[in-house]
Image (cartoon, rainbow, N blue to C red; front, side, top):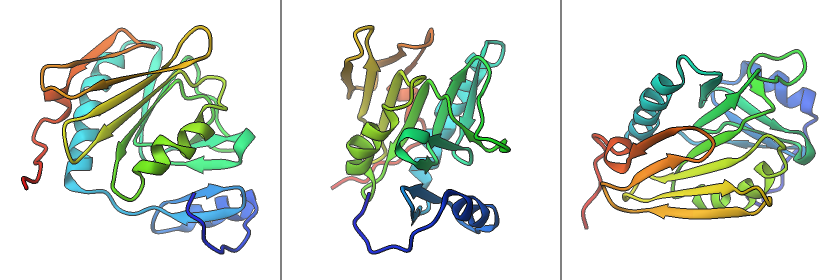
Length: 192
């Protein structure tokens, strides 16, 4: 998290203020951090993956949740909004809540310039304390590049990177695959 002098908020304070907030905020160990808006490319990538993965999961035991649903990482006191989360089996929710899950199996985040170091580093460390968490996918919105972290049976996280249009991202935790060309459909990269 960014180092800033922040007022301390209890979880109850955060949840109450978030319910009435006009924008999304993350919560980490008593501090609240405003989230910035997303670019058109960010939305395109989330939409493309949501359509393909959501269609695949439609008649299966797993369910896809998008960026307005929070994840609670109890061990680390973190509430965060991933771009996409997949839960297999029954979703488990934060007490008295239907907008915060606690058992994601797959998390997908689209990287932005302001959050990419946090998403790859500290946030990934925080997510790893979730017992249900098995796969983390990071998608670059500025160039065709996808990073897939998969937890192997020994509990080690293995990285696979994809950079070519015809590369096929195979979800390890599901029998689902998608090409980078499909992920980046209509995404407009800036040329130097």
